[in-house]
Image (cartoon, rainbow, N blue to C red; front, side, top):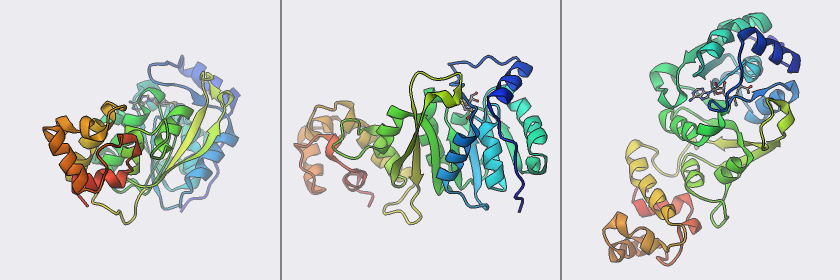
Length: 286
Ligand code: SAM
């Protein structure tokens, strides 16, 4: 158990590190680096971690959040795709939190290709996600690591709203249902633009998922394969009734209607009215 402090990175340190590495942040990799220690502390607090949590962080970048996480838990695995940033990270941690350096494991890889053999069995995902792949990375991690009990990620505000949306909301859709498959999803705050370098064009939001400890339905490959195609089909044509939207999936409108009625769902509804439990029931996995 190590409760040492880390020297968090502020604006001056971020510029210095970037200059030393000759890094120009790229949009392609969603590189907006946090340079505000208060925001780092806010994110770590919102994740509500135990010291024994095994945290996986996607995209450590220059190490802003990594240092904050290392203060809070004894094990952090950071997955970074950019080789220059990955190579620097252990040095930054050794300089700014020498007593905690042994608690960091670095994986230089595309987060979308990460498997259990890279990361083991993390209990928490905490990350300022690269915006262009935030939802696929989030869903990939939820699928790949059933050991996760908590997720706290920063994404674009509109993505945060979509992820946490409830049935009936205008922004409720495929990501909302798929994320809710793993546990209750909620927004955990808004983050302004000026805590980043470079500042993005839009605000960011925190999303928290408390993964089911005792899931109301099986969370397996088989159940995902039964439920997720129904979700995709139901939202592929948002304006259609479920009977029409699911006719391809079931082979005909009549077959879709029969399945919907058997699951106690009105076939004239639209997909946006169904909660994840309805999709699970329709798929016959619970
Ligand atoms: N965590 C840092 C912070 O808060 O300052 C950086 C966050 S920045 C929004 C996103 C980070 O994800 C960058 O370091 C970028 O290089 C990295 N990244 C982008 N695409 C990635 C991918 N597919 N897999 C892993 N890391 C990725």
